[in-house]
Image (cartoon, rainbow, N blue to C red; front, side, top):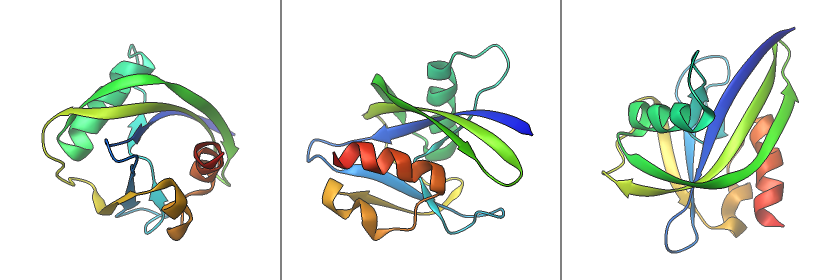
Length: 127
């Protein structure tokens, strides 16, 4: 099975809300996820996350810590996702790849249809 190594940003604000994005294309279109993407050759996970967030959202983030690592089998590939707690350091969010986005309180995280791998992170955030 194909292996994919990705990073995800759990971006929070001063009000305790978490930033969620809705996929705008592909077979998983419409599902919600934490923004991020694939690690390129020679990148550390942190470098990949900073690059992906600039590419997707046009902001610069500060990475606080690794929250968890998720292993998930999708039908076509195995996903290894490193999830980092982050905050916005500079810039204004501009959606370059996503269809929609929301700031959600932890109690509201279940209000959107998350990708299966991301649901594991929701459980960690709510506990």
